[in-house]
Length: 114
Length: 108
Image (cartoon, rainbow over all chains, first blue to last red; front, side, top):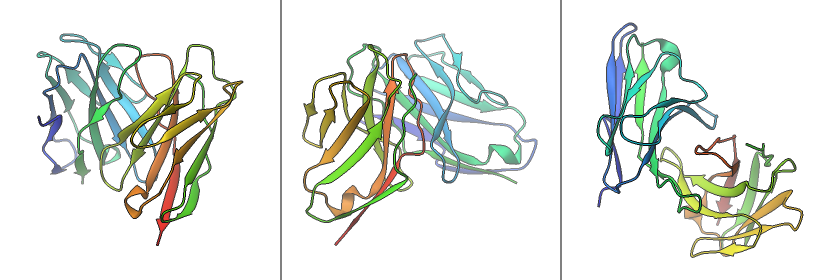
């Protein structure tokens, strides 16, 4: 039981390049989330999904796109990377019921845009 | 979601209880209090949550005041591995909003 797996773990991009971050969960969770964390800051929500085929914007969605074609996968895309998108990206998943047992987070993707 | 206020940092001696406070004076009746922690460079880890009753699990205890305007997370016997940033979050919707949390340093 792997939980939430993020790939890649590290990446360096040049300004203007594109890339896709993959999040996969094997817990059959309905909800999935993408957060970013900058140095000394808490996590900020980028986008989230409440089920297969659905996505919604979070606090800081600009510059990112997402897709949830399969229940177990949530993809985060950067179409034209900018230095301001240098950050650590965390994916998480959860059950949808109100009384739940918490989000399960992945180990993060460290992205540097130069 | 209601906002929370936490001290930026706290110290605790190994083996002693760590009591982490959180103020959430604008909490509404249907909002839960959640605690997560983030050990350096790792993804956050769920600890505990509650609505109005005190809660305990294998990791910690959560004490919520009767008026629900504040809460305390208690780690009964802190170890060096409990050094982390602890986040107190109040939520009613489908997402969690993380603040800056409290950096707990457990020392030998």
